Figure 1 (tube, rainbow, N blue to C red):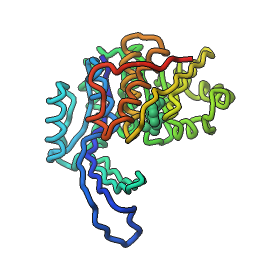
Figure 2 (cartoon, protein in one colour; figure 1 turned 45 degrees about the horizontal axis):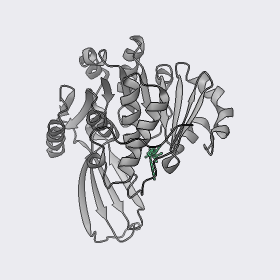
Figure 3 (cartoon, helix red, strand yellow; figure 1 turned 60 degrees about the vertical axis):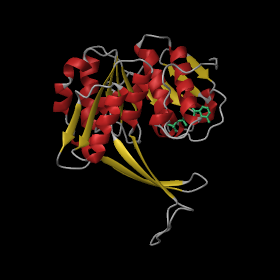
Amino acid sequence: RVFVVASFVEALCWFVPRLPIAGESLAASRLEVGLGGKGLNVAVGLHRLGVEVDALIGCGRDEAGERLLRVLSAEGLHTRHVHRFEATSSGRGAGFIAPEGQSAIAVHPGANLLLTPAHVERAAEDLERAQLVYGQFEASVEVLTAAFRRAHARGIPTVLNPSPWQEPPAALRETTHTLVVNEVEASRLLGTAPSSLEALRPSLPALWASWPECQRLVVTAGERGCLAFERDGDALQAPALPVSAVDTVGAGDAFSAGLCAALAEGAPLREALELGNACGAHVAARIGVLEALPRGRPHISSRTR
Ligand code: ADP
C-alpha cells in the first residue's frame, strides 16, 4: 500500500504550426484536453500495477474536478482523500505544442495549493498503514513536509521526486529516504550533470550530508535508463528498454510508479529499477500519459549491471 501526496492538473494542449511569438495570434490545428498532474499519474500508475493507493488530492468544484472524480472511480481508486474547494479552480495547464515537439507550457496550481497539513492529519490512519509514502513538488511543501514527518516518525519509507525543481527545505531533507530525480533535477541537486556513474560519485558525500536520512539516490536518464547509488556505497545501473519513443512526457512519473510499487513490496533495489524502466519505456512508446500507463506489470527485458 502506497500513500501518494498527489496533484491534479487538467492540461489543455493547443497544437500550433510553430510556437507563437509575443503579441501574435495563431490558429491551432487541434485542441486536446487531458487529465494529469505528477501525483495523479503516479497514483494511477501504482494502482494499475496492482498496488493499493491512497491519494491526497485537492481540486476545484468545477468540471475538471468532476472529470477527476470520474477518472478515479473508473480506475477503481477510492476518493476518501480528494478534497474539493470553492475558492479556486482545479489545477490547469495550457501548452502550445509545435510539430517538432517543442512546447511552451504554463501551469496554474489552483486547488492543489489549498491542501494544508490538517488534510494530512485527516488522512493519518491511511498514511500510517502504508508501506511507502510518495511526494512531488506540485503539492505544497507544507503538506509534503507534514506527510513525510508523520511517515518518518512511524518508520515508513518516503520517496521524494523534487519536481518541478525547487530548493528542498530542511524538514524534507531530514525525512526523505529515497530521492528520485531526472537529469535536470540531478544537476540542481548535485551541482553536476550526470554523464556517468563515475561523474556523480564525487558529489555524493555532500548529498548524504545534507540529506541525513536519505539511503539512496535514483537518477533517471531517459533512453539511457537509470542509475542508483546507495548510502553504503553500492551503485547500480539499469539500461533502458529498447523502444521507439513517440512521446516521453510522463515517462518519469511512470518510472516512479514502477520503482515505488517494487519498493513497497520489499523488492531489492535492482528489481525496482527494472520495473521503473519497464514502466517508463511503456509510456515513452505511447502517446499521452494517463492513457499510456501500463495496466498490469509490463515485460522486463533489461538487466541491471
Ligand atoms: P523525465 O520524464 O522525468 O524527464 P526521463 O526522461 O529520465 O524522466 O525518463 C524516465 C524513465 O523512462 C527513464 O529512466 C527510462 O526508464 C524511461 N524512458 C524515458 N525515455 C525513454 C526512451 N526513449 N526509451 C526507453 N525508455 C525511456
